[in-house]
Image 1 (cartoon, rainbow, N blue to C red):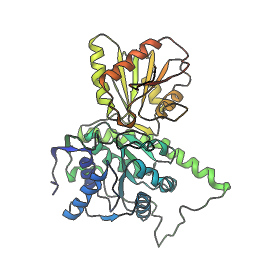
Image 2: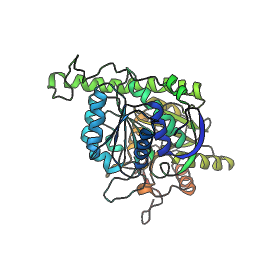
Image 3: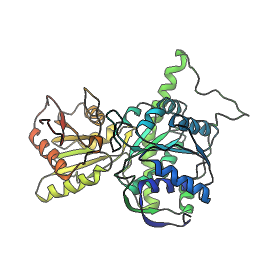
Image 4: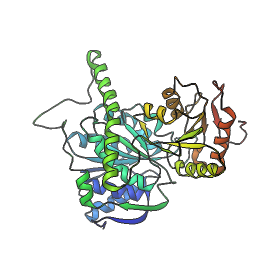
Length: 398
């Protein structure tokens, strides 16, 4: 049984997520196993059986059905949860898009894993990046504690009347999902105060107030609905900041909202990083600072909505910028790089795109040192012929 009171223990991100879900009290959990998230739904099955979570635990026959179950249940006005990875998220795609369009605040954990082919069971962002245009908020966590905390914040963000969009909390497969770290679990009373029971403003499947959802909309009204989704995504930026501040004030963990910075006060070179690699990057920044090099780090937390203004502000004084991507768009560049370069459109600074960690390849301190050194080479240049730099790739000259 999970204790009701606050406690600290060593656990994987999968277990931390599952416990956070019990604290959030969803009424429906849709479960289908796929590595490396399977532990999450297995833990939740145990917690439902033990009485730690009073929810309808539905074993789906596939990921497409799992998201359909969540969308249908959320449409009745109850809180829901599911988790997936890689091919499972790709199989969900049809309903993922529909869920965003119907403005259903489903919360899903994505254990990031490479999307085949070539296949692999190790971390990469090629599974979640294709869903960036499906009207889902996307955030990427650094460690197991952040995974726990952001499940709770995700429900409050998604369910806010200014947002009402689904959200995926993304965490590096195996690096986080299967390694243990110290996690503080909040008490049930603390979470209940922060995250009250869900009261849907619009229950679409209400027999007393019947509405139509997921239907064909003619051109006369279609663009207005898409614009409303865009406005909700933009408004989410305000909500994310408010909830981050509230969470920090209550529980002492302030993640910065859309992004956070490290040693950027006088930085001349900086790299934008997402996910578990942030921890390694901080270590490298400290090592280079000890040698007198003015380097810094921007931790990008939310990819959707993308924090254009915040990125521009964080990088306004640096001389060279690097963007780390753990996936990329073939024939183009990494997806994060495209967004960062767009945010800095009017800024004439050299920007390099570092592709690393594909297929789960380790991202070592020496690799990040290489990135910072590469930025030193391009300082002062206004134009980069080819910004793409593959890191630690055999047979590729960079």
